[in-house]
Amino acid sequence: MAAAKSLGTTLVKTMSGEEAADLTIADLTSIGEVGVESDEIDVTTLDSTGGYKEFIGGFKDAGEVALAGIIKSEDAMEAMLALAESQAVEEWTITTLLGSTWTFDGFVKSFKEAEATVDGVRGFSASIRVSGAPVYVAVEPSV
Image: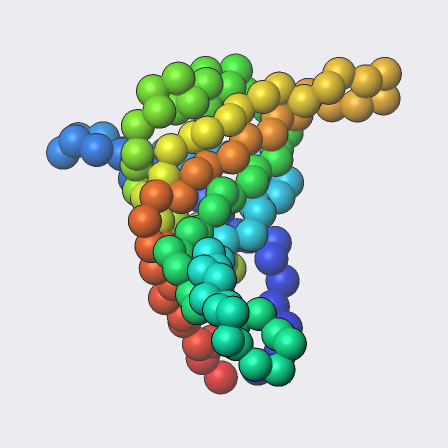
C-alpha cells in the first residue's frame, strides 16, 4: 500500500439525543497523535541477574489528542468553549480520507485561543483527554 495524505481527515463529536446532529470540528490544521501507551511496573528484585532492570506492563493510557485550527466562525469558538466548560465525556471519531477511523470517548481538557500576532490569523489549540480504550478500524483502499 502506498502512503496516504492526511488532508481530508476529520474529527467529529457524536452528539447525544435523538435529534442532535453530530458536530464536525471545522477548520483544523492538525489533529495530534492517538494510540496507546502502557505504564511500566518495575519487577526488579535483589536476586535479578544480568545487571538489567526487569519490567512488566501496567495500565494502558490513550493519552490526549492535541488539536490546532483557524478560527473562521464565532459559533465554532462558542461550541468548543462550551465543550471545554462542560467537561462531559463524549464520543469522538477521527476519520481519514480513506475511511479508516479512530473512535474514543473523551472530554475537552483544554481550549485556548492562540496568540495574536501582527502577521497572524486567529487560531486555537485544544486537547481531548481520552477516557478508556480507543478503537481503530482500518479500511483498505480498493484497487
